[in-house]
Amino acid sequence: MPNQATDKLLKILRLEAQTGYHDKAVTRGLQSFASAWLADAARYNIDPNWAETVAQDMREYSTISDDARRRAMLDALINRLRSPMLKAEGRTHPPESRGLASEQRAEMRQPVILQAPQVEIGALLTRKSP
Image (cartoon, rainbow, N blue to C red; front, side, top):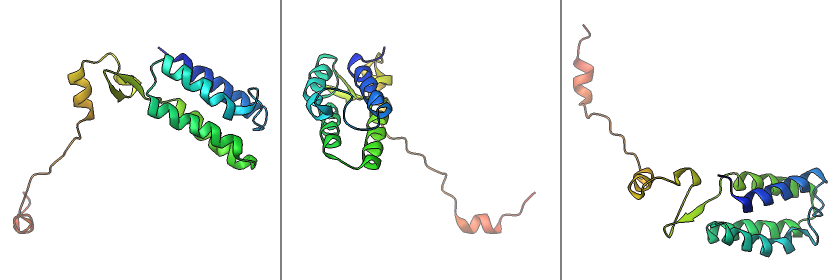
């Protein structure tokens, strides 16, 4: 299920891109909208640390005057919103792991360690092929 807070912000950011990166998609610019978006993010259970980084980027966007830098920042922000971190059970995890048992999520976070069989190099060099 899509998250309404991120969907709303994505629509605003797309409008910002369509209108030429002039910080006019919302009244008073993205900087002033950041606090309202943080409230939406909290209401829709988005991890507050992740949401704050998004809000900080929105504030910074409003201070940039160079269109190329604004375009790059907006593109990065849109990409970040496409994979938000949501909070559940007091931990953050990607939305694709929602609905999994906590043991399954824990298993997803474990690193995979691959080990090749140990073979003596000398044995490989002296081995004759069949």
